[in-house]
Amino acid sequence: MLLAGDIGGTKTILALYTPEKGPYYPIAEKRYPSASYHSLEAIIQDYLDNTQETISSASFGVAGPVIAGKANVTNLSWKIEAAKLKERFNWQATYLLNDLEAIAYAIPNLEKKDLFLLSEGEAIPGGSIAVIAPGTGLGEAYLTWDGIRYRAHGSEGGHVDFAPTNQIQLSLLEFLHNELHYEHVSYEQVCSGLGIWNIYRFLIHSGIVQEPTWFAKEIAKLEDPVPLIASTALDPNLECEICQKTLELFVSILGAETGNMGLNLLSTGGIYLGGGIPPRILPALQTDHFIQAFYNKGRLSKVLKNIPINVITYPHSALMGAACFGLHPYDW
Image 1 (cartoon, rainbow, N blue to C red):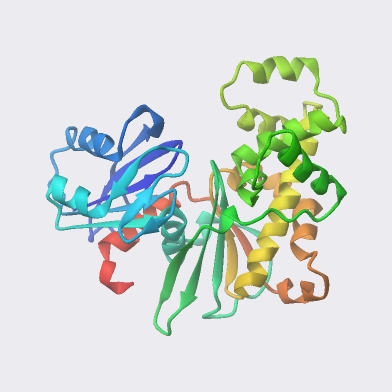
Image 2 (cartoon, rainbow, N blue to C red):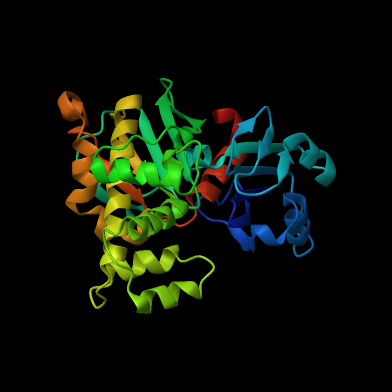
């Protein structure tokens, strides 16, 4: 019996898996608000207190860099060590993966119904595959073919320098430097849940569009206004220009960074958008704002023309990927 987990700054999901059922069919899945617990150990203990199953090993996808079996969770104060977890809970083995590395491991196991085709193309068998996932933060990973199978590789590419592509994005960069006092502006700060909120505040500050009084009152009630900004932008019955402009700018930046990954990795095997945001904004991703920014690479645009782009709609791909690795660790 394997305990697998998707460990993030907002939520932690744990579930049991067996080799017989495989990584597509979790048993006894449970979700926890991460910030309500002082450590992953506390969540695991709560989970174990409510199951009678005997667990032999564990595998966790963690939102943050994983180095030598140790991880610091991005946006939390947690420190996780595979060896300490293994010892405390008396498991035979414990594996820590970057959460995007986990999503990457899930991709070969996803079915057609788990994907939404955003841009057609022709994937080259054995070509490298890129994964970009805007959610609480911005995660990136990739897969390479070793002649037998795809192997996943974690990355912290979401923290590279944000590169504006037009005047409004230059103004956004200046706003983040001068008004919000970010010493380093990364793609995560403009292409994630935090990024949507930063863009919204930028548009108010710049005076490009006005914030409606009725909407200002609504978001003032919320701890996290990002879901409301996105859903309002996509609601045909609501007229909220600032929400629409926020989502358009966000999607353009996401398209540009997706194109960057296509070039950086020469992702001829395809590009997959994961994370919590893309499945919720599919109509916005189908506009020209995304795809034009993706292709806008000058003379190298033609390199991207045949790369298929899919959105992962399977709700727990990081959890599945952690299970894929944990059930068959020596296959990777």
